[in-house]
Image (cartoon, rainbow, N blue to C red; front, side):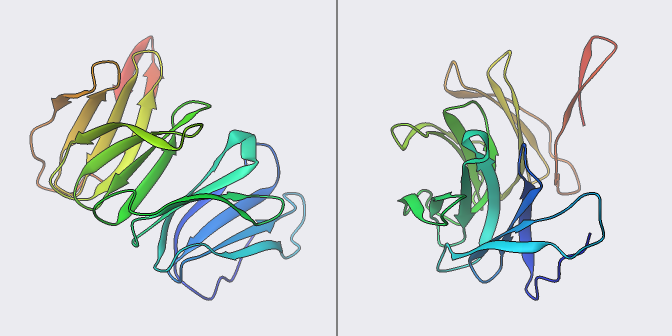
Length: 197
């Protein structure tokens, strides 16, 4: 499958149950495409939404794929209905600097990370920030949630990995500085042991 977006894509996410992919573009647009995994046919554009004034850096399906959540360098976070393309809610000035990453935590919480190393946790029901962590000195490159222990892992351009404890509302651990930027994090269970890569 190949989609010619004609503009730079900062992020993409696959729908949890349907053959739909969402892309966040440098222009601030979000585009959703339906694709057929069994054929070589061109994906069909479903929705094209001018979601943000500046580039759309993050896109994530939430609410079982009924909503696409996006974040931008304009510091806003937008929830858009996947079927209609209509805005559900927008949080302007969600962060003090550009929002770089988004992830789902639970059915009712998501997390965002910005260019200044701040990680926030949002309650999607009340549309409010319920945790904020000054975890890093540079941009948040990736996050991963460990649901059993309620820990949120974050990686950053400053070369560190953080462990944010959502129960205690504090940065629990932070790694030594690496010489290189840490750009992603994944948690894997191998032989009953948790590994963080």
